Length: 216
Image (cartoon, rainbow, N blue to C red; front, side):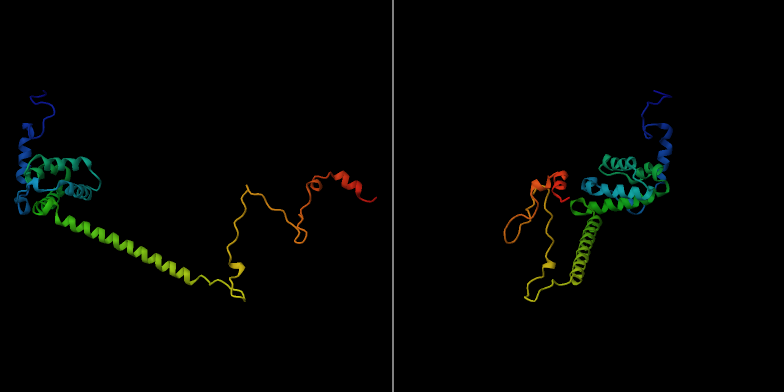
């Protein structure tokens, strides 16, 4: 206990800041959509949470996980959250953008409350548009591939044929090179069938013996 106050007390529990918090609450706008109450039991928060994270990032310029969790917790604390209290609590984070955020958030919550399943109709339409756009991009990519293939086929010359009408041997695909593990067949004479390659004895003949057989 320090100075008559317990450590870890909130602004609402600390009497030193109670007047300031209440003053901010009274100054918060309460007109338009903020007059209406939202029943959080009729809102699908799993569908709304991504929108909250995206909207906060757009306003502050970066992904603020702390502020995101703070907003989600305030919406889950009461069955019918008070928009003026939320506005006062968010002023320190969003400053002059607090009113813009609360207006858009409350509009979305009221829309979700009136929609089947608690999912805002605007989010459903946005998802449908994203899927349609992705489908259109895939179709354009497939059409571009078909055009490219047709152009390639148009520039490919037809196979050459001989006088007999058979395909030319020059159009046949090149034979694959023999692997290192295969044994090369010896070159044989077409009539005798004997190998044209020199015998192993001749290949290994010493140079001295060949020189001795040569005439003086």
